[in-house]
Image (cartoon, rainbow, N blue to C red; front, side, top):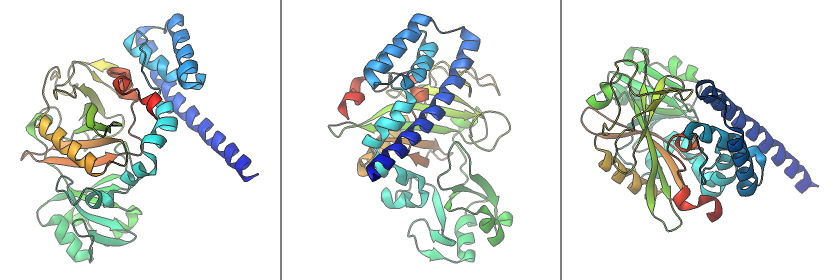
Length: 347
């Protein structure tokens, strides 16, 4: 009886997940078709057949429609975003990926690396020193945060897409302010970014680097993209940036950037600066560090890292995501990302 009830619960949960995933797919498909025209019926049929043959269910076809509409052709090897999230991630990352949402573990998991700009954690009503996890009082916490910095950033645990981020100056930092946040999280210094990124927009950009450990234990960078803020904003958040694929082998930007609904532009809307072939500063040093960090915590096989270079050429990891490092943008723009790894048949 318990097994039967559990199966019903699991089926309902998966059905809801698929509905939400495919709702997103429909949004992007409608957006693409409004610009490019309706997807050819023969291509739709190919997607349907591939979903049934490869993923055993037509519910995985909508994301194949999106990828096909973006590329104007069907390609074998694409993985629907819902199949990746529901079937693949639990098998290659499991519960080990969920730890990424608990930001105060950053320096413990990655051996107190200085690549994270973490200064202080606020956990269960207490301030903890980021380097030692030693509990400190309010005044000591304030000294840690503002001794060398005029402004700091608080990021809530389990937040995503730029939400749950608050900027504070010393005068704004008080017990009441912190308690009103009603959340655990991490305090980081506000980063002054490298001139390369500042030339597009003063708000901090993020480079998303996705690393993957194959079955032989090799770590590779499989996809990365640069997220450049647009307009008068403080940071990258959902709907406020241009997203440009980056060649993972060279660190060079592709020609086209993408708005939130995946329409394209070859120039940044704030200043008309083109992207094509610009190279991310210190890219190969970033790759070196990311591979080393991932292999030091190899339990989740795929990790998305949000990175920036500061104005003193230091690599700063703003956060990492192993709970659901999505692949839909990668598949839609430069995929199939995992074709060489045959990920579907290897799990």
